Length: 270
Ligand code: HPA
Image (cartoon, rainbow, N blue to C red; front, side, top):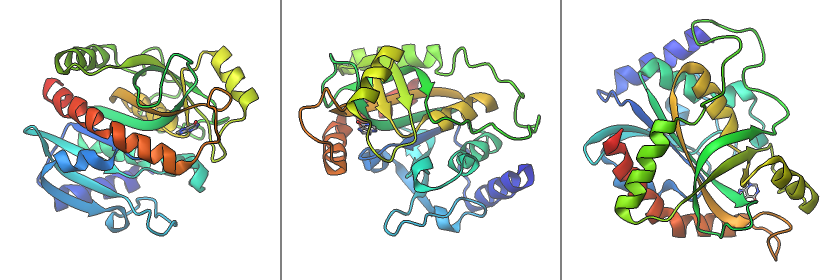
């Protein structure tokens, strides 16, 4: 895998002169951040050697290089979900490439259901910790010490300094936010009401189908992480009507502007 990652990294280094230290992963409905990127260089995933190939038509992702407020960034528009059938190594392949490329900070975002009853749809939540409910880990298998340790510490997966900076920026911009624990599970079915009750009792504030694998690997690689969830709906049992993906995307889109302003300002402070 190490050689594959090097090959991918070298391809990107040959294609762009950009050398960002910040990568941003955009969750469902949060793709609008790409409009904030200047001097864009867009590379579809399908052109990138060894990148997982999307099998779902019309779901092709792309890497976007450029600057936000003058700061170089690498934006991932579209991620690989476990529920799509990718294995965990594929889901987290971009993080290995980030590291080789020189990325030091990863801002990861997602759309999530609110398990904390005091949240409302449209809430932005800073992720201060996570619960891995995927039933597996992206680090299972033989370990290559060139990437990271066999038994990585997870005591500060979401960087406290980054969290403080994000809070400062939110204060300056008058952006309301909450803070809490993100629980990730495979999906693709939404949770049952009984499962949400269990997840709440376990300490989850938000539930979703991504982020946890990427954060485990980024942390293992020594990349600092800032995570933001966009609460698009109340989780099952708290919500008063059935979920729909359309609603998730619609609410994320509506919240997108607040999210984009926050991220655009935060990258200046990193
Ligand atoms: N559950 C899981 N994932 C989600 C949800 C949810 O309620 N909303 C958006 N992504």
